[in-house]
Image: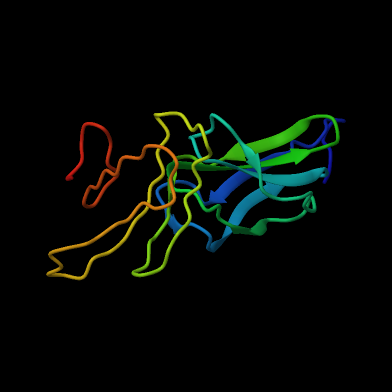
Length: 170
């Protein structure tokens, strides 16, 4: 780093990947990549499942010269995923950036393989968990079982996109 006229060099970070529009399978690994300039503090990676409304720390302190980090995606589906990378100097964020747009994390179901849900007891009625499965061409019947519940659950299915209370196939 150098200075001109006594000015402090500008700290810069830019998230390059994932930067929006990507689709990932939950629980798999991907590389978070960024471009940096003049970073001196520790770098941290955060994930938001709700377009930046909340953030969950994913990495420990990374070297100020790092430009990537191998990340195991969480086991939750979202179509509002974002990544934040920030430089922390011990008292304040010096440089930060987030994904420019939302990305998808999908939870896939496999035939005959049970998958535990993650709805906590007393979850809000508006809480949704999303799961995906592919059916071979010509399939006329598919069975999905919801087992081990002590409360109420509704199942909404929609081909090719996220179901909601107003738009679903069955």
